[in-house]
Image 1 (cartoon, one colour):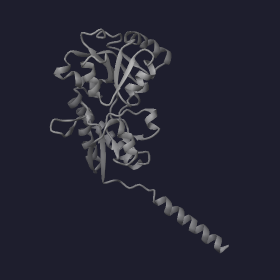
Image 2 (cartoon, helix red, strand yellow):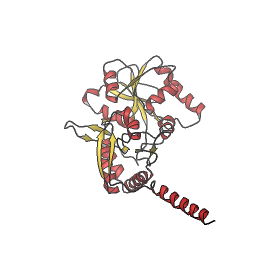
Image 3 (cartoon, one colour):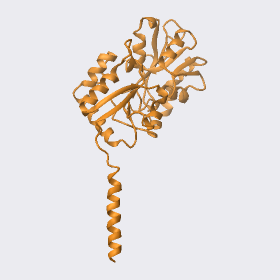
Image 4 (spheres, rainbow, N blue to C red):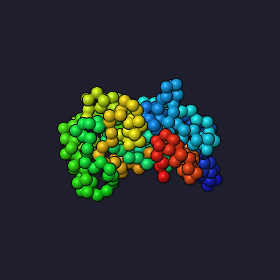
Length: 280
């Protein structure tokens, strides 16, 4: 009997010891990865330094979390694999929370909403796309969404439309337009913007804030946003910091810092600074 009690006690102690190895402690230093090629969210300036809404926000969040942060650039299509390979600790790269991504990583509380649109040539045949000035919520009734998108499908039939690889914009084309358009995938938004200028494609689909930044450049004065604003559905649940699923302590820290930055107006002010619009 005594041996049984000793064995049981050893098992309990062993269990506690094993469990304690999984307890997470608050990190004192982390590395945040961004794309560095998605103005105004994150980009590399003429001086070679990272800048943009998310760079300023990352620095603010790190100050609130009282940890040292290193911000590095990483190609878009390598962000999630590299996060899970522990090459860095978080992603802040205008990444939309989607069900597919939630299958492989975790996300913080969203720090910005998302909305997409199409950019076309002002004097081109697509300048007056149907739905301009309206918003289509893709999370709505399926039959209603399909009805609302049909005029746009008709207008884009046979056209080449560009989008950045591994984004919700590609998912949008694949879900609603793959049978009517020629979808083209690009490594960066800059590449599809340049192809639009060169006449190799007829339109691009991207986040509206990114398109607005592009249109502010002198060499894109002959282009415009056309068609409806697109939200919900494949465009996910907002933009958030990507984290490894097992980094629950870091997620809690990000959530608390983001909530505080929303509450005191910091995020809204940064949006006005970089996007010329507020997020409230």
